[in-house]
Image 1 (cartoon, rainbow, N blue to C red):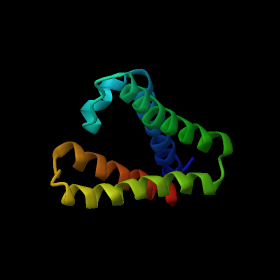
Image 2 (cartoon, rainbow, N blue to C red):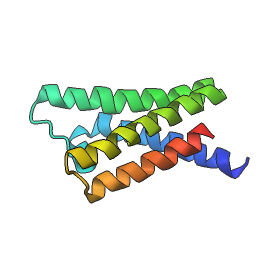
Image 3 (cartoon, rainbow, N blue to C red):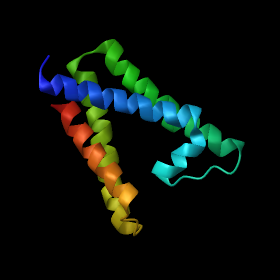
Image 4 (cartoon, one colour):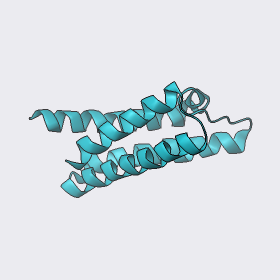
Amino acid sequence: MNILKILQIIAIIGTILTGMLSLFWPKMAQGFTGLTAPGGRGITEIRAVLGGLFIGLGIAVFLLGTREVYQMLGIMYIAIAAVRAVSMVIDKSIERSNIISLVVEIIFGIILVL
């Protein structure tokens, strides 16, 4: 197994773990997203979107295993990073957690697209 494949697997596992954290401990998601969920509706949204989507996409890559699904997940990360970068400037939210997320998204995106 080459180093790129190992890094891709780490990115996929990171995706699934992010989803699991959001699914099972949605209030902890506030620490790395800044989102707050004062009621059941917001918690459901965190579980469904941040949890279900990230888990589903990560598992899909493992199940389907084609180059295109790896690239699809990578494109998702690059798109998130692009929107985050613009939003950080527009919303004046250049802060540590956003910078860390941006760097991880760019790295995961590049690793998965290759």
